[in-house]
Figure 1 (cartoon, rainbow, N blue to C red):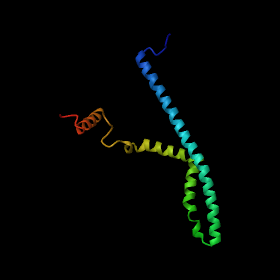
Figure 2: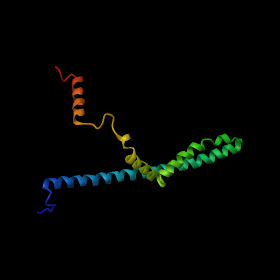
Figure 3: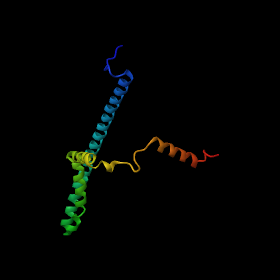
Figure 4: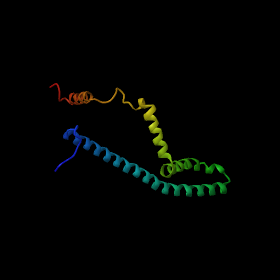
Length: 141
């Protein structure tokens, strides 16, 4: 069985690069499925919440008319915000706006993404393992 790969690349390097690219493809497929599930969940939630919101609006409006008290309608306001948010998430452009904001943060405010004390290193891990071992009494006896 013959495999063709660039002449300047060793077979090992070619396999590592191929594995890496396959992992990237798989990660992206998983991310797409997770986002699709989130959108589907939002749309399903919107069906139930929309029904609740509609019934609540009718009942509260009826109550406000019968009691001649418009304050009875106040719960519609926060419910309306929740309904609008869910609708925008499921059918609107909210995800595109969030994506645009995330891209802007990555481009212009990347310092916000840094870990305190910098990225984790192997030495940090060894120190934490040493501390765990010494606190449990496994070291120093």
